Amino acid sequence: MWSLRTPYMLSLLVVAMATTGCQSLGINEPNSFFVGRYTQYVLGDIPNQYADLSNPLPASSENISDGKKLYQAQCPVCHGAFGEGDGPAGKLLVPSPANLAVTRRLPVATDAFIFWTLSEGGEAFGTAMPAFGNQLTDKEIWQIALYLNTGFSL
Image (cartoon, rainbow, N blue to C red; front, top):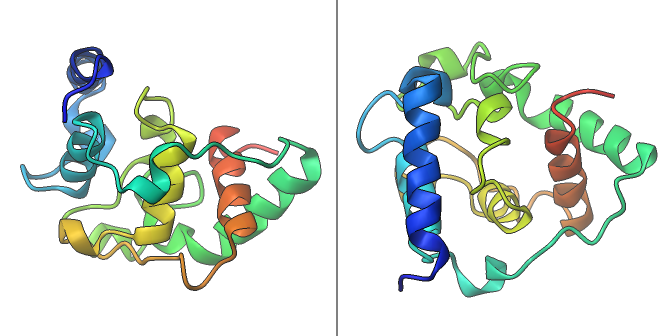
């Protein structure tokens, strides 16, 4: 279902892709994780349980630090230490892992989108992104989201 934000979001996505280049976003082929999930989100097709979520945790140094520890334990092997999609295992994956350092700044990278992505993983989009919804608590997923939103700094 199209919403009022759909044309706006699609135009911003196109501009971001044109400005930064598809490779820096982690797009290597038309059916990549990035294109599939972001397009689904922009078209308003996010699962209902995630659609209206916003991070309930304060962006405290404690939550961000805990998010950094969780990220470092779970994500760098694919996404790299700074989220650039250049981890040792990520270099072998097709499609490549998303470049989180870039995609976190796009308008579609909302709390709801990040929580959905981390919870459900990429199986539905044909990627190796694991689903963390059964491995991490909601609080831990939100802490990772806070860390991503800092731009991998603390």
